[in-house]
Amino acid sequence: MVVMAPRTMAEMMTTVGSTMASFMFAWAIIRQYCPYELRRFLEKCGHRLASFFYPYIRVSIHEFTGTRLKRSEAYAAVEAYLSANSSQSAKRLKAEMGKDSKKLVLSMDEYEKVTDEFQGVKVTWLASSKTGGSAQRSMGYGYQQEPEKRYYRLTFHKRYREMMTEAYLDHVMKKGKEIRVKNRQRKLYTNDQTYKWSIHKHTMWSHIPFEHPATFETMAMETEKKQEIVEDLLTFSQSKDFYARIGKAWKRGYLLYGPPGTGKSTMIAAMANLLSYHVYDLELTAVKDNTDLRKLLIETTSKSIIVIEDIDCSLDLTGQRKKTTEKLAEDKNEQGKKEAYLKEPKEEKNTRVTLSGLLNFIDGLWSASGGERIIVFTTNYVEKLDPALIRRGRMDKHIELSYCSFEGFKVLAKNYLRVEAHPLFELIERLMEETKITPADVAETLMPKSPREDAEKCLSNLIRALEEAKKEAALKKAKESFSAKESEKEPEKEDQLLQDKQEAEKPL
Image (cartoon, rainbow, N blue to C red; front, side, top):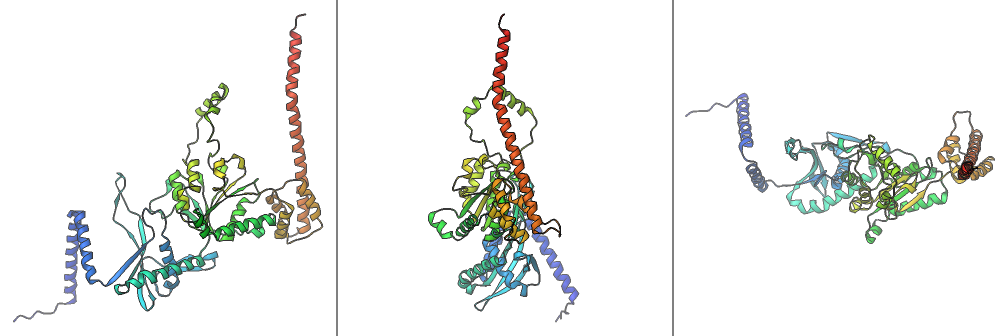
């Protein structure tokens, strides 16, 4: 009888290492020479076989689905839900700034696992990040790394399938959305040039915290007009069922127009602060074409304001509907000028966004994605815009922001000087009726430049500025009148010169 001596720990580790090395070598040979279809078949069979003995069910919630056009709302809700309890049990956390930048919000980091309990049943959540394959073919240009995919995986015993897939997941979605609203930090987004975007980027927007302090209370505008705009905004934000009933996308367009310095950008900030919406500042000249414009729209969230400032300068949106007869009526001199202009070197256009693409962006089929969205255009020259761009249904409400009124001045005086009444107000009101001045100019005049400047000094500065503006306006009007009279005299001078010439040429 032969008795085997017990192996030492070193011998056992050597045997295990040798076995693993052999297995890894065999697996590498199989991966290299075994057809992909056969390997996939064996993997599927292995998963099916394991499912007979594995008593747990897994539910994966991915950050992006389909063609990665839009971030999953379910993923965001799960992320917010887990942030509420993961800080108590998770060992690896990530921190983000919460609402109004007052505190950090902690959530579980990638590859971290936490447990949760619902009605006495324990479940496990795993935050994971993976790459779905070593490489993927890219349209005939060789191979490139597939972008990273993130997901949350829920694991529970199969005996609780009905409870988990119905009651628990509904509970997670509801609580997650509530937490997102509570911790929501408003952001200011902007888009970059499309040709710089990489497939590894998760979004086409970059952002910073939105911290603009403007409100409707601090805006230099008539009280009645402000109240009308506020009521319109609040009514829109509470009209989800109404828009669904009438069969219209839950969005609203605002056109802000008026001279420079009248508060168009401030109005947008006040809108965002009133409704607690994100702001997407869309730079059209950085968008490659209409397709990328649609992608940008899809990646915007609900409860947001999409802004295109100075729309008349962003793209050549005017003069695109001229009739061909106008071109045929051009004389030879104009044609010659055009030919000379075409020969001059021109700067290459970086964007191929068209008026049609922009109209579809505002009011097409794609505009209904997301919901609860406001689109704002600003312009200094509304007459330059194509009528199709600003018609009702696209730009639903037109708001003219004009020169500062006396009521607007009183708001600024209260904000800047903390003065609601003063003996100089009567003179200021009379001057404001006689001349035009923007709210920006009034605000700059009222702002104290040193500790020695009190309210009376600032108001006197404003009176001086109004008187100078009045003189400049009168001088400008006189010059225009003189030029008009001179232009009327020109034909008379030409007729007189022609008569003198004809008289001189008559035979004696």
